[in-house]
Length: 403
Image (cartoon, rainbow, N blue to C red; front, side, top):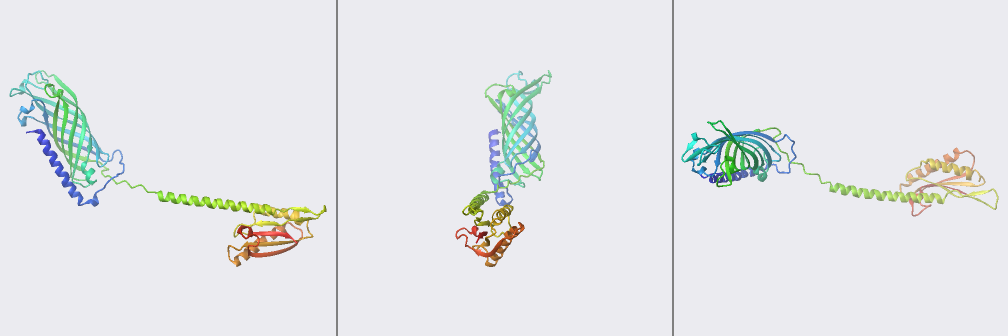
């Protein structure tokens, strides 16, 4: 049998099976999960497997042997993990017997005179290999991940430390050879249940020709292997689709717009407060002495209020008290006219009238609390623009003038 033809046939069968599997999946697309996937934990999607089968050694002279003589038994045990539905890692032990042909003398450590065959000798080696593989599940890669898919295919590449060992029956001498091997294979999984797979592993390993202690002719030799087994999937066995990141661009733009609007409002408030302060400075009480006499004439005095407010602040109360003590108390010959107002640009007439009277009462209460008797007239102007045509805030005021 031509071993290359055997592997070519297996590859064709695998390709046909992938096509058939993809067709089945296409009809159940709703159950297929496509990436990206959530990152699994260290012990998620871990599997353990055992298998048994045949080894097929391919050395320089092995083709002269009858086919049934060339097969040796094989067994394996491995532990692996699917990092993603498509990519997996596996570490395993692979043991068994290798059979080959040697047509020279008994000097080869793996032959014995009892194994005389045709014009040479039959080689028998006990093989032990520890190998690491990188696996690619092409079913999940091309057709999407499905936990209930019956058939999955995973080609893989691996590298391993290989040991060939024997004991000569007559001398009892131990013979051992060590080499590194590179393996390419196809790992096929048949889903038997949520946790159990039937597996078929077919691979070919490239190894230095010295592994069988025969260094003639070709530089490299091959070891074929076919094994049937079972693999158990530990929990957690599923993969979940990663949630798409939330696009917060629109929210960021909204926040930026609101921040700009807030900055504009703060700038406007700052300007209004500045105008109010300037207006207050313009009507600060001043006392002018006439012709050197002790009689003083106080200038107008104003108290400004916030929109819709009639309550005086501590600073305003102190300013009124100061005006009473330093101006009104020293100018009792004058009549003090107290005018209160609300701006006509906001609120109804009734509301402004009520607000104007409340502001007037607030100022009068402070004046009365200071003691003393003064000639006063009070006028509630309601909503008006008499004090300023352009700045409504200057009409929210109580003004004290002399007459």
